[in-house]
Structures are given as structure tokens and as C-alpha cells.
Image 1 (cartoon, rainbow, N blue to C red):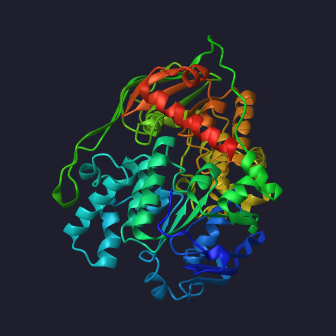
Image 2: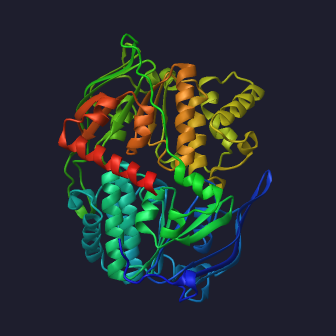
Image 3: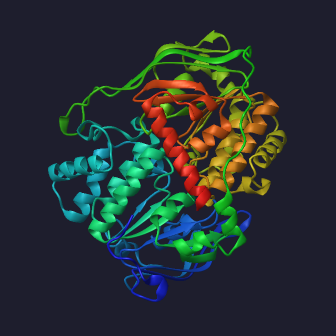
Amino acid sequence: MGTATKGTAGMGGEKILDIRGLRVDFDTNDGPVHAVRGIDLEVAPGETVAIVGESGSGKSQTMMAIMGLLAANGRASGSAKYRGQEMVGLPERRLNRIRGEKITMIFQEPMTSLDPLYRIGRQIAEPLIHHRGLSAKAARARAIELLELVGIPNPKQRIDAYPHEMSGGQRQRVMIAMALANDPDVLIADEPTTALDVTIQAQILTLIAELQKKLGMAIVFITHDLGIVKRFADRVYVMRAGEVVESGATKTLFASPQHPYTRMLLAAEPTGRKAPAPERAPVLLEGRDVEVVFGGRGGWFGGATDAIRAVDGVSVTLRQGQTIGVVGESGSGKSTLGRALLRLLPSEGAVRFGGRDISAADKQAMRPLRRQMQLVFQDPFGSLSPRMTVGQIVTEGLKVHEPQLPARERERRAVEALKEVGLEPAMRNRYPHEFSGGQRQRIAIARALILKPRVVVLDEPTSALDRSVQKQIVELLRDLQKTHDLSYLFISHDLAVVRAMADHIIVMRQGRIVEEGPTEAIFDHPREPYTKALMAAAIDGKAFRQTA
């Protein structure tokens, strides 16, 4: 994927971004946290620079600092210049003239960046109205063009959808549309493909590359997916614990990595296979002919939206100790199915849990069952209260389901849960915004598992994690499943992770099951053309990482 102008910043040429000695620090209850420790970084016009590293390495905080978007307890020091203009410490009014028009950002967690009260068309139109002075009608027309550009199906209808009515991948594409609306000079893409399946990933990356070539914009690409970096970036900075440990031209760094940490990142891959659950294991969760329909009401400017059948007559049987992987492209109905089975969305059809029909169960009837049926969300930041400490978040369910439990016992269980997901117990005194995306996902897993559930719906639980941490989380989830005889509905677009986690796979497309069967049979002998395309993409991706 070429760019309009190959950058020369790394060789002392023109710089569109010039970062020197940048530090980012957070004040916490446990003392200061040094998220970024005096790094230097350069980007040339038209160049694509990737910043890679594990969760918590400081990748995102580096860019948040130059955009003036740090949390209230964060502070940046050092220098970050855009075309010679210092941005660190720049007053808000002057900063607003640059960000949103000259420098835009695609955020890692779109659900927290999209306003849940406004339709997506209005949210895409706002920067066009503000920065370009377009009329509402012209902005709406441009918003439809942008939705079509980023691959949203039926954009004229979907423009009036709310964020919660879209899949994670579709929300991410809406964020990309917003970022590209004003033809920016610099595009900061913070994990822009984490919520996307392998086929859509390629489309989005091709789209961004084509727009880069057309507009000549520079791209700063923050990611944990090194396969994407090799295809997409001109130069790479590798970060660990707030420092740059290695940098250089992409081809050179991948061919001959010098730092042991870089070599570890290149070698990481989830491994192992899950043994199938016994055939006679009891059925815990069952859905028959489940249907979920969205839309069919008035839209923006009085327009009408068509009804969207997100889940269309799907049947699922989950047994004790089993893991069913649910795969398919963004918008296929994977997440909606999971929520419908947990009775978190209105649906038609029959749903049974533990032999009990819960199809018509109201909120009160479902409450005692909730601790046995937990959900780990795709977007952890959107589900973690910013006003609560991690300890309070993790033990929130205990207060609901075991209100008589002494505070000391809740504290002990929180410590135990955090240790199980690989977090230090002292972290329970910190707040969600002080953590990386991957760390927040582990907090969300701890919150679900502290209640010792029987069934856990895992909705893209590793999408925000780098490969090395993905491997750890997969092993953790398998160990927990074995220890507690848990049943998982594992929803993911990452087929390498699904293969390591699931013993049975359901392939969904446009709300329906197109194929299902044992994991190895689906991967090795897929029958349907759509499944074959998904598996081929997974094999290509794996081969790419192995040769990287």
C-alpha cells in the first residue's frame, strides 16, 4: 500500500510532527504513574508511522498528549510540534483550530466517543458544519457519502441509526468517516481495525491508504497487530513501559529486529486447542429460532428507517464446559445474538437457561439469574464507570448479589480476581482512564468472573489486546473454564483466537447461521463459500505473521 509521498522525517527531512522529550504523567492514589518517559518521534508529510507495543506501553497516551486530550489527572511536558507550532500547553481555543480539522483521531473505543443520544448522521455532520460551514442538508448528504465510503451497508437508512444499534465494527467505521470528513493533514489511527473482521480489515486499510494517496495526509498508526504494520507502515517505533526501545524502517525492523522485546512481539501467537465438552454434558443455555429486529421508526429530518433483522431465526445449544465460537463479519449479528440469549435485548423465539424457559422473564425474574449469566463487553471503557475505582467496579456485582458480604471479604475477592487476570492488586485503587485498553479489558473480565458464573458471553474480549497479552488471556480463560466448569459463548472476528478457544463454531452472516460444526472441521473443511473466504483470510494472516 503506497503513499503519495514517502516520508523522510527519520532521515532528517521535513517534519509534520516533531516530538521531543515528551513525558506524560498521571497523579493517582498510589502516587505518580509515568506513562510516557521522554520519547522522541518524527513524522513526515505523507508518511505512515506505526507505534507498536503491548497494552500500557504508552502508545495511545503519546498521541492523546499532543491532542490535549489527557484525563484531568494527566499532564504532558516536553515538546510536540505540528508544522512548527508547539501543541503542548497550547490554549484550548487555539488547539481547537488544529484538532478536528488539521489533525484528526480515530479512537480505539468508538462507543465512548460516539454520543449515545444522537444518531450517527448528526454526529458525522457536526464537524462538517463546524469546520466547513456546510448547511445541515449538505452535511447530511456528505455524511451519507462518507458512510458509503467506509463500507456501511444501506447508508441512506443507517444514517439515522443510534450507536447502540450498530455492531462494534460498524461503529469503528463511523469513527473513521468522522475523522476523514474534513480531509485532515494528519490522521492518528488508534487501533482502527481492532473491532473489524479480517475481510473488513483489509478493506478499511485499503481505503485509508487510497485516501492517504489522494490527500497526501500523514498517518500515525497505533496498533498491536504487527501483520498490519508490515503491510501498512513506512517506519515503526516500538514502545515498552513508556519508552521507545527500537525504531526504524519497517522492512529493516521486521527483517532484523534488534531488541529482545521486539523479537518477542513478532513471535507471539495464541496456541493450543480446547478439548470438546462431553456429548452428554447438560445443556445450560439454549435458543430456538431467536429473532431480533431493530428500526422501523422515524429518522433525522423526518425520514423513516427500515426495519433491520439483526438476528434471523438462529438456534444455539451451549453445554456445560463447552465453548462455542461465534464468527462472522461486522454486522453479522454476533453480538446481538449474545445479548438476546442473555435476555438483554427484546427478542422473539425461545430461550432456556438451565432447563428453565426465560423467554418471557421480566427484569425481576431475571435478577437472581444474572450472576450465573455474565457478559464481558467488546468496549470495556464504555462499561466501566469513570467515577469508580477498579476495586469498586470489580466488586459491584457482589454488592448486588451478596449484599450481606463484609467489606473485608469483598476486598479479598477483588484482590483474588485481579490476580487471576494478571493485574496487580494495588491497581484496585486507580480509575479506568489510568489504564490501557488491554488492561481495562482484563478489569472487565475480573468483574464478570468474580461472581463465579456458569455461562459467560465474551464479546470480542481480546480485540483490544496485543498478541502477547491475547495469548495470556486465552490461557487464563481456558484455565478458569477448566477450574470452574464454565461455558463460554466466544464472539470474535479474530479466527486465530477463536481456534485456540472454541470446540464448536457458528458462522454468521446477515443475521443467520450459514455453517456450524466442530472447530477443526470448520477450519480444515469448510463447506460454504463465505466460510471458506473467512478461513482463507485467517490462514493468510497467520502466514503473514509467521514470516514477519
